[in-house]
Amino acid sequence: MAIERTFAIVKPDAVQAGHIGEIVTAIEQSGLKVVGLKLTCLTPALCQGFYHEHVGKGFYAELEAFMCEGPVVLMVLEGEGAILRWRELMGATNPAQAADGSLRQRFGTHIGRNATHGSDKPESAKFEVSYFFSAFEQQ
Image 1 (cartoon, helix red, strand yellow):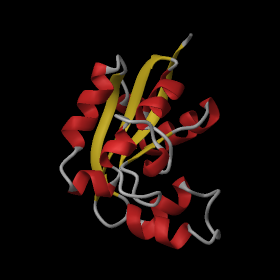
Image 2 (cartoon, one colour):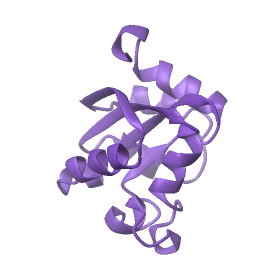
Image 3 (cartoon, one colour):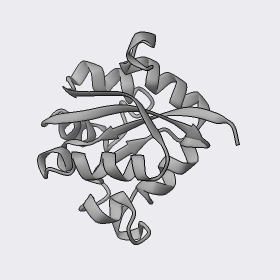
């Protein structure tokens, strides 16, 4: 497997519940390296650009409101097969279907509040990382 980078978000529900440290610890214990990290609040405009493929869909308004309701942690993760490894660590999108011990099973409450986000493929990772991080912010 090649060394790659992926994008991760600790969503507002997990930040508000105080799970940032546990999630970052799980990432580091999995062997992935955090090479970029920032705490910020998203705006509707940032959400629209980031989730551009979902704008106009029935669930989008709820997604935008949720992602703007409080701080998020944005991260760039690096490691062998980082995209797949981060997705496995997160678990299924729906916490009720996520594997035991996965982050979404542990910290998510339902499909709309599932604690974490991760890129699904190399093209998405490249876009998502560059959307929030300059080259200087990801060492």
